[in-house]
Length: 289
Ligand SMILES: C[S@@+](CC[C@H](N)C(=O)[O-])C[C@H]1O[C@@H](n2cnc3c(N)ncnc32)[C@H](O)[C@@H]1O
Picture 1 (spheres, rainbow, N blue to C red):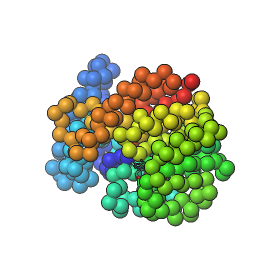
Picture 2 (picture 1 turned 30 degrees about the horizontal axis):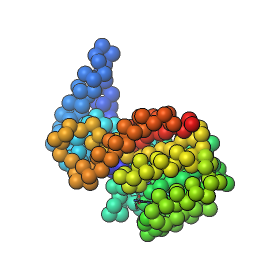
Picture 3 (picture 1 turned 180 degrees about the horizontal axis):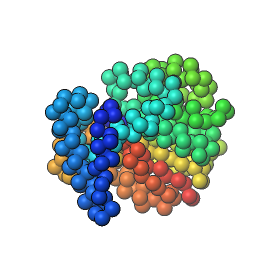
Picture 4 (picture 1 turned 60 degrees about the vertical axis):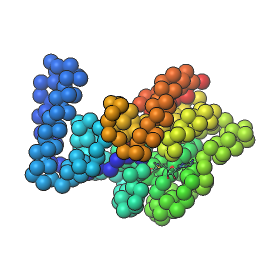
């Protein structure tokens, strides 16, 4: 899931100028200065009526650092959208019109997943939480022709919205979609025995209150040396928010689950972890035992 923001190129060069003099200051100091700079800049731009940034400042009331608010659109405009394949672009645009579009995986994360899957030569993968299929399509496009994705979601209707795009891209044959809650499917796979340690990559992007339950199962199903990616582990920046910060209700409701999950991953000796601020935060867990 990712907050969707857009920003045209205005202000990009000024971001570069803001970095002057970073060498002789602490990183925290620089980040604070950048953040203040970004906030001021944002207000000025808002004042001049630059609509996309008004959306960022006005609608996104979560306490995400302002610097991040500017970097994310910069990355999208500079490095992601120009390289996004036609099917992914079509699916992103189609999803943008859907009332729950806030749930979609962001394009920078889709790009990241695509590269990651190629780097690890993934062939056999799983996805928990499909929605309209952006991360699913990014995965399907990155896998070899005989690659497989076991994809699960309680909602088939949303998957079927994106399915024509996936079919047109010629990668639908890689997908085995199962409608329904994921936990019983994982339990069945474990019970079968033959799926233990068989998945190269598992992407978890569903109900946050079940992440620890997913982990109990995915750790058995991913192969040693394979990866599990847990999405939204920065939970819209709220993981680092002060206790009295104003949070949207759905953010507040799941925050404790995300915090508990992050602590559990940091303490799990069966995996090496790396938490990346891509999209809404993705924690990569590499199974080591
Ligand atoms: C954040 S969205 C997934 C976004 C998707 N990865 C993408 O690229 O757009 C979360 C999805 O998880 C699904 N979901 C929620 N609870 C679930 C469960 N118990 N089992 C399977 N899917 C579930 C929801 O229906 C929703 O489509």
